[in-house]
Length: 132
Image 1 (cartoon, one colour):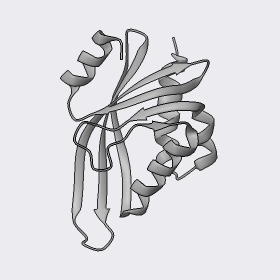
Image 2 (cartoon, one colour):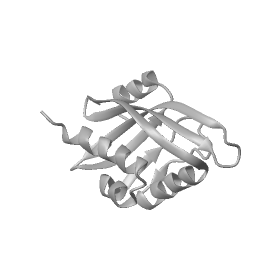
Image 3 (cartoon, one colour):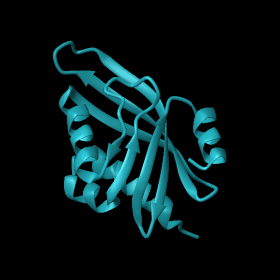
Image 4 (cartoon, helix red, strand yellow):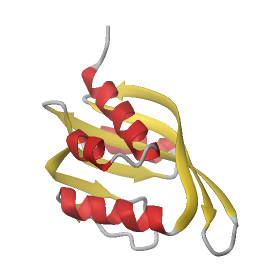
């Protein structure tokens, strides 16, 4: 049976890779809250779609090429946990980066209302247990 929450998260990743800002905006609630992983440069929580989009644009602008390769996407309690690898190439340096990450998404009424990023699955699962 299809899971609407998982579908929304998968569509958001597809929109990211296609640079489809309209589809991204449609996936996110206007009042979305996004938390970067602990230790991330410019690691501040973004409140609202405009702030989240600004963070997304800054991230994309810093790299010549970038994309996400999505791995497992699963329901954990009432949230969606997605494993992905963020792959990028430095604009000036040409350095290749491949960061494994996990995103914990809260989806309500077909839109992402909260997302938190993690560098490892264990911390993401702890956040679901804590109700984050």
